[in-house]
Every structure is written in C-alpha cells, then in structure tokens.
Length: 458
Ligand SMILES: Cc1ncc(COP(=O)(O)O)c(C=O)c1O
Image (cartoon, rainbow, N blue to C red):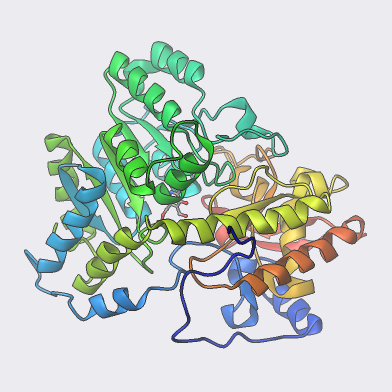
C-alpha cells in the first residue's frame, strides 16, 4: 500500500527550542529592523524560511565524519575524500573547494570574464549576477517564456529558451566565454530543468564551441524532479540522473550549503586545465591552499558525506513531497503562486495577491513582513527590491514580485508545514489591508540584504 501521509525519513536525536513571541513583540522587532527581515535577530523568528542555504540539519553520520577531519594545511586526507565524492557524481577533472558558492562564482568569473562579455543563463541568482556585473559583463537571463508566468503550469519552467540562446550565440557569440544553466532555477521559482533541455544546451555549446557550466546548487532536487516529471526517466535513480546532468557540462559552480547538506562550503569544478590553473592561483590569493580552499578539513568531510546522502531517494521523496503538500493546501485556497512548486520552496506571487500595491512599492516586502508579524514566519522577497535596481542606479519593476518560503533541509516537521499553511491563508484573507513600503536607505549592490524600509500610509 502507498501511504498518503508524508513522514520524515529520519528520527530526531537532538532538538533545538524555538522561541514563541507575541504579535506585538514581532511588530516592534520588525520596526527596529527597518522592516527588513534580514536585519531581525534570528531568535525572534519562530519558523525560519528565509533560506534553505546552510540551514539544514546534518545527519549523525555527518557529525561523526567531522571527527575524521584532517586539518593538514596541504594534501589533507579530507580533501581527497571530498574530491572523490564530487568526482563520483560529476566526473570533472579539477575540483576546487571554496568557502561557499559565491566564492566559486567570483573565482570563475574573475578568471574568464572581460568587460563587455555576455553570460547567458536561464536565470542568474543574485550573487551570480553581481559577480558577472562586477567584471563589467552582462548577465543575460534566457529562461523559457513559460518560466516568467507564475501561474502557468509547465513541468520544466527552469528550461533555457534554446532559440533565444541560439540567437545570443549567433549575434554575440564572440563576447560569450561560457554558457550557464542553474539547476534548479532558484530566481525563477526553484523550477527544474529537463535533461532534454540540458542536452539541447550542450548541442548549441558544441556548435558554437562554448564551454557549458552548471550552477549546481540544487542538482539532486533537479534530478528527482526529472525522475518525477520527465518521460522515460521514472525508472532511474536520482544519482544516475544527476550523473547524466553533470556529464553534459564542462564544469560547475556549487554551493554545498544546499544539496551538499552542509552548513558551509562549496566548490568550483571543471575539465579545462588552463582555466583550473588560473582559478587555483586566484583561490590561493583569496580563499586558501587548493586542498582546503577556505574550509576546515572537517567541513570537507561533512560535504563528502552530504553529497552521498542527498541523492538517497527516500530523502528526496520526503523533501519534494512536503513542498508539494504545502503548495496543494495554498492552491486549494487560490493563493497565487508559482505553479507547479519547485524543489526547495514555495514561491508566493505577491504581485498577484496584492494588486493594489505597485511593484515600486514592493508588494513582496509587504507580504514578507505580514507573515512575520502575524505568525513569526520569515520568508524573503525575490522581486523588485532584489532585481529592480539597474547598474545606473535607476529602478524598474523586477520580472516578478515573489515571496519565497524556502525550507531548510531535514529541519522542520510536517506539523510545522501545517502551521505555515494556516498562517499564509490567514494573511491572504486580509491581503487587501496590507500597505506598500518605501526605501529609506540602501547600498548600490545587493541592496535587499541591508536596505531599510518605511511603511507607506493607508
Ligand atoms: C542558484 C544559486 N546560485 C548561487 C548561490 C550562492 O551560493 P552561496 O550562498 O553559497 O554563496 C545560491 C545561494 O542561494 C543559489 O541559490
């Protein structure tokens, strides 16, 4: 018999108390934080869905592996174990550890980009975009048109628009040093990319002789969604699918804080010897010696073990099903959101829920703050605040105004998910009363992390 109840495929050995606060206390806390949930004290948050990055729970096997960490400066045993785990999945020749994903991006782009270059991607994540733009290059998003319409059903809304990529490579090919695809597509809603689409990108890269890199942060979730949604893939294991994904690429950037099931870490991996040599030289300058790259030996052990656990099917089933379950509850109450849900989060469509708040009054911030005030839940705006600032300092509406509720891996239980559903429904019921915000102060880059806001009058 197939049971409908989703159970966590683990039992709990150690618990961490979460603090309950009153709505009054939360209203005070968010005002003091300049109405930016990034500036809250985490102790004032009940259910923290700010990010799935580095917030997961490690297994007892990972905690055990920490004690195996070899802290040798050079040639550490833990590095070789880490390298072998990465190569078991990716087969890439060079594996360069970094302290997190953005360090891998920084090193890759600083190694290969020149001002005026173009980097095509389905959707650049914010740090990826910033690391491209800081080199004076253009981060060009080429996700399929369906990927830009939140409510439209499509199994692979993270797919690259292949005709658009072909056009970019045809017109601007001389300025394109590599093509990237982000799996799953975080900025576009955690949406998967099909194997068929990755094969299409590979074929174009072969034709135009361009290297192809994956932003592989959520490769295992992508592999499981391929298994669930792509014809002909249902009989394969997530690991087999993941291996095929990597086999289509020439390299990857990776934040091990996601599908590495670790609290810190990342890597850059590739086949090209010349790029790898340059990257290692830069690594030594900013991260550390090539066999530790800014990580402790015990971090490398935790990641190595995490990469093995993350492709286990019972884990991926529970993870993806509990996100789907939340989405189903919200959908049945007609809360607008990205459909179908992606791998690591539910993305509420704040622009759809709050049509009375124009994008430049940040409907995503209004929804995030309401969820915090009402229920102590912390989500994050992925919209005009995150993507609306142009390099020249002017503002435009972001492509969408979303609120991401990202689930840390193996941290919350099914009743936490029920609580979140109840809270979202409560906020949605009173959506008409929410107000927009204005920015009081903000930096010129990555402003969503530190901007301070003020609520607009009724
Ligand atoms: C798709 C994607 N790429 C890159 C990164 C950057 O990784 P890190 O936070 O480890 O620097 C993230 C982090 O959220 C991400 O989601």
